[in-house]
Image (cartoon, rainbow, N blue to C red):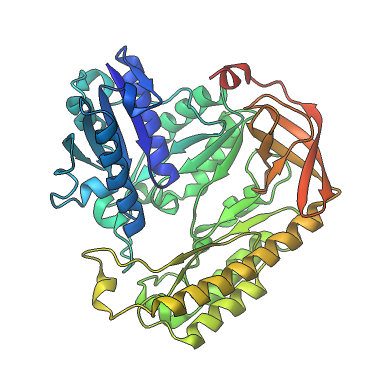
Length: 423
């Protein structure tokens, strides 16, 4: 059987797709790069925005037009929220909520009992992802993911260490991901820092990175690890902000922080550190957001040492509480607010990159060949001045070439990169 696998959305989805890929390979089947060549297509869906769901539907229809013999399976968050619209798309035979590997194995007609608990050992990306938990116990009024994924469930430390050890044989960086990674261990009253500390101690050499994590969920031990110079945990945090207005945060259901406590948590991490990547998500035009609320967000962005921002126009998701809070701001207003925030983010990013020029960085090469580039420890994407194999980890000197920060390789670590560069 030949399977085409397409992923939409977050790193948690990418991990789930890698698990499906491993399951298909373990069963003796192959994953192909085009739906034209496939017997079955698996689409791993996202429900964060209406645009993401529209992209899914378009992709399923396009694949069906190109291959009328195709049988399609849609998994993920949009599948969990489906009321029949996805199931009625051409060639779709099954919808599987979330990442239920047993159900996906059954839909693929694979032996579910043998394959549903499989873990990943090598992934197709240069930087591996490791899902440490699933689901979320919070109820942000704009979010459909909690509705799709259910309550938080944590994976055990021993299982995660074993999988990370396997991944470290093929990958120089492992990104810890999930739906709400700060809730890892909540069932046992164990903080995320316990897991990260165990991974750093028991999985040698590899660089770990945290995916999106609430700023106020960084405890003293995790802060110490993030601020360490030993290269084991990347000095980088993506901390969702959503709004700099306390009034809007309350309307969003984000009750666990205010603009002040968010700022204090970020400054405790980044203050005094020349190298620290700091990003955030911001929603523009949430129902009830006023000009004053927007300016409060702009002021907070201006005051904090962000190195990048992800700015999103508000997208109303069916059945979420935000749909009952009144209309969003008019589209032209949202566009203007988003443009102002993106402009502020671009200036902060440019200033940070300029400060990094002349320094050194720890880069994992994500694209080899003539257009070689990689990701630094503080989450900058830099082109390399010499070709280095994909998957390699290299120390570089950073040079300022006008608007571009370039990297000159200094020394290549002993890396199992030949596997990745050959894929």
